[in-house]
Length: 242
Image (tube, rainbow, N blue to C red; front, top):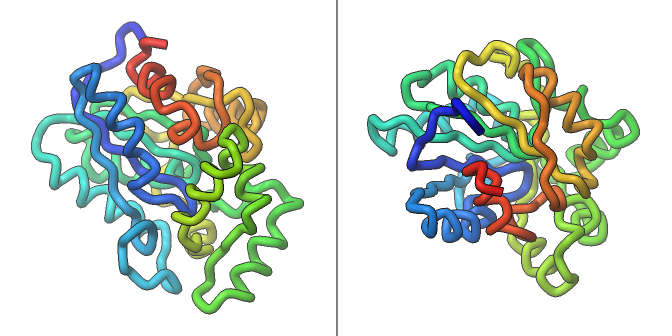
């Protein structure tokens, strides 16, 4: 995108139930363009051993800030997928000098003081609370058929089951916390990428989320987890080479 600051390093923050593992195909694709990618496990996700029961949005922000600090002084492009959109504004506010550009990828966004749970479609909210209440640690876990439909509907079943096996229970806590920083208050450059066949945040929902950040989304082909179904296409879109 003309006029956007360019960083040769990207830090990827995963969405609900995923982990750093989901970004590896994109990181490999970026290497062909001479861009280094880095990904982290948020607390309680992927291989991170943090107990999930008491986690909140501030824990996700702190983990992202710590990752920025580990990468050193050069500004990076910070990419957040799905509920990681709640995390990015807080990380940017904490380390504005470390972020050249933010990319919201099929991301849920909040204004300051809003809660993630209130952005979830009303028909889904009771199930979130029911799953959390039935779990031992206040978490959400979708059955395979729903995860396949909602997250990675472009993957064949065998590949989808392999991805599903790597999902971890998603803490409800971050959804319930009010945002200390909003997407509407960021001062760095930003983009919003939406997918045309996203069954979690369809294009109209994504456009409303993008508008909170003062953005118009760029629509690209793919499902909600395009990093798994089309990592090369996502890498090109991230670099505006699509």
